[in-house]
Image (cartoon, rainbow over all chains, first blue to last red; front, top):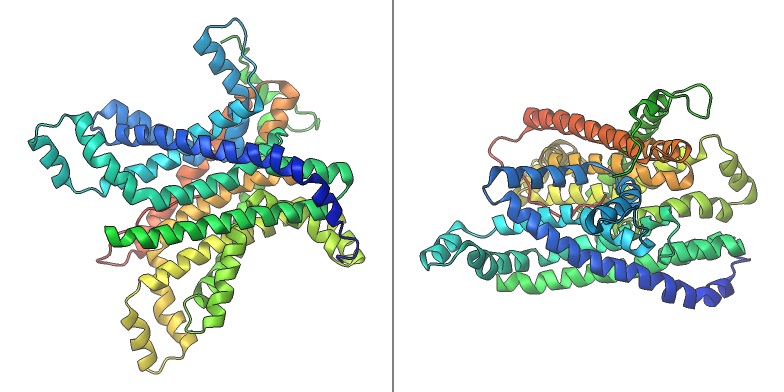
Length: 230
Length: 249
């Protein structure tokens, strides 16, 4: 069964897998998380603003993103982003964007819907008295949100946000459908070139497992630590 | 936007010579639903077993259940599909491996198995959370009345737990439907794959993806309303809903 298991192909491809592939995966994860939390917070504020059109647009966006598979959204944005670029810059033809930009836009906008729901739950977990107190002190809406509500909401939701980031990290493997060289894409290219599917896919699975497992244990540890302070 | 819209494309005949593009999308919807339903049944059965053993008083069973959940949760679904589809047949004895590879609709069975195991880990988490959310006295009372442990689960704990975790189970079911799109990577011609194929043959990118998006939304709405009705029917009086949490797609 494992008699002709070729460890050498893994060793040989390590620089390619990690330098080319994992860098892409981690960069995409990090930037999409930051962008997703930023836009997600905006979406949450829109939904909770009490201004009907804003709330409706945000709710519609979140529900749309949460109803369709990520794979379909990756295809959507892959073809849509050039047109959006053309629209923004006013160019004559659709703008060709690279694989990284295309997937970054996709993951940021897709995950914003999920991060937004987490932030909304976080904001709703803050007691109304805090908002009332801030207003009684003469704070404006931006001040109330920026100094009082959002810092606490964010802090309460850090474990959930991090768990979502681990899911995002695993989801980035789906850029495979665009033949992009992320970690899985790199492993898959070596696997097909050298005819070593068993070795490469098992190794890729092991790497994803180790990273996700370590990260989720870290989140658990953080959750246990921050639980006391609350 | 200099894009040539052509909504009539849905009624043109697809390259298979028989079906219109609209029909191919509907066939894909059928595969999506078949995959999701089969995987859901498997996931519900496996997930319930694993979720239950994680709440039993036997430390080794708990550890086994925890390991199961971590294993299937910490590897991306796409990688799991590849493991089942490309790696498993190579690791089996040659005869069995060849039989697996030549199975008609192999990508369907593989997708169901991969999606079933992946989802079962998530359901196990929900079932465990549901059982743990019950007051400890219920288990003790059941055991004190002379019920065996399996009886206590079957008659007292699970009937309550399932009703409590119905909302998260609904979103897991919606996730299974969405996650079945990942199976296009192993050649399953489900809805997203059909839309992709239609886009490749006709170059009508946005019509194809719009149609797929609309179908997914309709499925979502139908399932959500159906489950809401079920939730109302079986609601436990006097309880409020579960807290939000991270979700995957």
